[in-house]
Structure formats: C-alpha cells, structure tokens
Image (tube, rainbow, N blue to C red; front, side):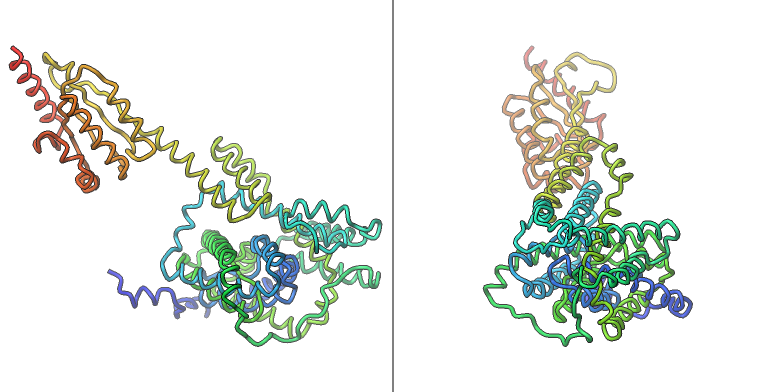
Length: 549
C-alpha cells in the first residue's frame, strides 16, 4: 500500500527528472532555443488576441513555462498561453475587464492544483476522441475568426463576443481600401510560413515570417498598428486584487478555465509521451505543475497556462530529452524581454494575426475530419455537435454536451448489446419441461437495459419455474439489481418459482443489499451450476404434477 508521504513525493520534482541530462544537455539546449524562437510570436499573438496584451502573453510563456517545466509531470512538455485558452479568456476580458485575467489565473491554478493533489489526472481519458477532435476544430475556427478585426485594421471593441458575428461586423466596419494594408500583411505571413514549411519542417517559420514582414512594414511607416511598448524587465510578483464580489463573479469562469487547462495539458502530455521514449508522464503531477504555473503567472501579471501541443512537438523534434529544454525556452524568452523589447514593440499586429490564422488553419485537419465522419454515425454526430456548439456558444459547454451525447450513444449501444435469451434445457427432455423457462441474461443489467429485460421475461405465460442464468452477466448496477428484485417478486406473486444460477462474486453484494437474493422463495433456490438447477426445476414440476393428481 502506498504511504501518504510517498504518494506526495510522487507529485514533486526529483533527481530522476534530469537523469539523462549528462548525455542530452546539448540537444536540450538547442531544442530550448528553437522552441523559444517558435514560442515568441505565438506568446505575443495569444496575449493580444485574448485582450490581456502582448506583455501578458510573453510573461505567461516565461513564468508559467518555467514553473510547469520544473513541477509538471512530463519530461518534454512545453507550457504557455495557447489558442484554446484565448478562446475562453477573450469573452471573460470583455465582460470583466483585463484585471480579471490575473485573478482568473490564480483561481484556476488553485483548482487545477487541487485536482492533481486529489489524483484526478486520469479523468481526461474518459473524454471520447470525437469530442476532442470536435472542440479542436471549433477552437481552430474561433481563433481564425478572432483575427479578422486585426486583419482588416479594425478594433474589436464594441463588437459581439461571438467570434462569427464579430468577424462579420469587423469586415463591415473596415475602412476600405486602407484595410488592404493589414490584409496584405496577413497574406504575406501566410505565404512565407507555408513556403518555409514545405522547405523544412524544422525551420521556425512563424519567427522568420514575422521578421521579414516587420522589415517590409517599416517601409510603409505608420500604416500598420504595432504591438507597442513592452516592459524591459519582468515585473515583480504581486497579489491580484481580489474582493468578495469579484471572487464570486469570477469563480464560474475560473472553473471553466481550470477545466480547459487540465484537459489541454493532459492531452498534450499524452501526445508527447507517444512521440518520444523519454518516459511516461505522471498525469496527477502534470496537474500540480500546471496549477502552480497558472498561479505564478497570475502573480506576475500573466494569463492562465496550459501544455502547448505545437510547442511540445517542436521540442521533441528538435532533440529535447529532459525538462531542461523547456527551462531554456523560458530563459530564451526572458532574454528577449531584457534585450529586445524595443525591437519586438514594432511588430505589426496584423502580422501576429497572420501567424494565428495559419496556426488555426493547421488545427483543422481534413484527414482527421474525414476519419471521424466515416467512423460511425453516432461518433460523427458527436463530432459535429461539439464543433458547432464550440463555435456558436462556449468551449466548456461544448465539451460537456459532447461528452453527454457520446455517453448517450455509448449507453444505447451497451443497452442494445445486453439482452435476455430463452435457452433449451440440457439433458433428456421430460414431461413438464415446457413449464420451465431458462433465461440467460447477457451483457449489462443497468439502468439503460433493465426495464426492457424485465418486460421480455414477464411476457412469457404458462410457466411454473423460471431459471435466471446470470453467469454471463458482465455488469450490474443498483437499477439492475433493483429491477431484478422486482422481477423475482412479481414472478413469485404469480406463483412462479424463481431459481437463480451463477451469480458472479463481484455482483453478489449489490444483489444481496437490494433484496434480490432474499426475494427467492427458499435459500436453496440459489445455485452455482446449471445441471443441479435444471434438476431442481424438474423435481419441482414433478411435485406439482403429483400434487395435482
């Protein structure tokens, strides 16, 4: 049995985290710098897109990336601001203001941290694949649509919080042909990134595109909005201003952010573990690390963080083997703050929008969509519903509804696979066998199938003995046990003797507690083998016949 102290130690950093560092430090260093270059434009873009600002995105990548690397449960995971988090944060910023982001980050971090301490890390495995792909497509669509205002040179202020409506409003409000300048910037970013990705997947395409377009934009002096002034140092940590009123107002959004942070981080860690042989990930420790990362980010004025699948993949492909690579990534971004803040300040906002539009488009994989849609009708429906609700309403609601719809179809399939079958009696047929009914109950006797099974057995007439064969029953819940008790009572009231054969050891407690066993006419009516059960049933018919004679 695992002791509490040992269980707690498994959630904390240890020397084994860096056991390969002696051999891999060169690869970790190169991978860390590479990921830092890739992460820079994304961190800036996600910060701007969320409404918290470019500085908040950069701070999140530095602080949260460092904390998650040290305390998280994956050896190669890279954390920071992500597109999915932007989708959730943007409407929160509109409703509660920029100051709420720090509060949300701390509150969500605490929730995720507690989830890790309570060992809830493996719950993400219960999310069906069509749901994951559905909200991934929805997130991609929302991120793309959120960039439309900057792409046409329009401020998003005063527009709808729905990405689709806001995109249409921005296009209508744009000052044409002035809007052609930011649109050309977006197009240039997309072309450069796509061409470079064809040349080599290892090139930091977004970084190179940003540099090239920024240099070109300087020739048009003042025609494009830029990031603007950034801090030249990391701000000192401070407690965000939290009042009882703001706490209550932000608690709901904090739970939504926490749910997303946990889901995305664990999915990213799981993908990372399948991409490399650096060891499995610890799901509970990953939640602890991500929770601490968001708390620290909030203290420094950043955003909630999650594991980032794209940056983690770059880390693995670039040779990262230990946590040192993610730590180097954060230090590389920190160097940008202290050395190159003035250079970063002149990057056009439209260029960042172009990077995010390409990133969003890559999230929507036509091949995966085809796979889901061609799988089964129910999975295709779950996928489509999740994607539509994500774009139309809310990501967390979409995941919840997607899981509920998937659960409905799964229960329906489980119920269909469960059933009751009348079997022929073994042995030499004897007079009176027609008044004995042997029913084999297969699959699962649970709330979704119990009533149907009861009705089928009750429909048989002219029977004096019923044998319920339960050895093939795989699962039984409280509803199934209660229904079985009602069935036994109903048959006994009709004068039908009920014999039960083959109750499995794991099912016996619930059947005893809910009265199915006590409902039998005699304790001897419970059997382990079929042959004596049939023999007892035939002897009962014989005694009944003799009594009638």
